[in-house]
Amino acid sequence: MCPVCRLHSPVRLLAPGTRSEGTGVRKIPIWIAALLLLVVIAATPSPGQAIEARAAATMADLDRLSAETGLSVTQRSRRFLDILEPAFDLDTMAARALPPAYRSDPEFWPNYRRAYRAQLVQGHLRSLRYGPTRSRVLGTRRQTGGTVALVIEVDTDQRKRDVTWFTCGASDLRICDVETGGLRLATRQRETFERALQKYGRDGFLNALRRGDLLEPG
Image 1 (cartoon, one colour):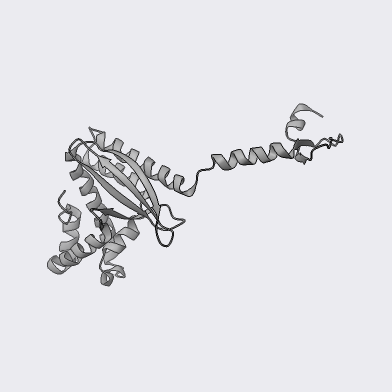
Image 2 (tube, rainbow, N blue to C red; image 1 turned 120 degrees about the horizontal axis):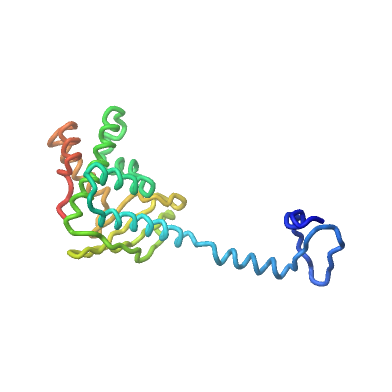
């Protein structure tokens, strides 16, 4: 048989004490196959490890962006959203923050969706006054229903705080909510947004959202 053909010939497990019968089929002992399987299993990350690795990669991107200088506001805003969009389900987060009566309005939603992202950008821009961030994942815990909570430490030269990210579900590794100081972001925003809608009306609320006027201090 030619060398290339031999390399691509099928593999058959070989029981102890058996011999190849010259059929052109390469055989390997069963114990070697079992060992290889154990190696593959050991090298495969667990779901918790996969979630931690994904979060660590996102935080590393945000840390690098926080330390980068010379970017225009437009460039920084675009980079920030490019990092967030794959890691966070921003539409679900925006919907949870909105009072229920407004979620099904087809005319209001597109403008609100953009304004919600604009507020996130404003939050990022304001956080730069604390200096570049240094972040690390402290650990994970499984929640009721299969969602995973990731505890993350965010450190700067001026402050240190712990933030908890919550995945959207057991199989969806994107983030759907954030907790700081023991309070969920969706709950705090929904209360703030409802008061702003009552006070400013829809257009005034959207303008306040875009400017970052509804962001919490700090």
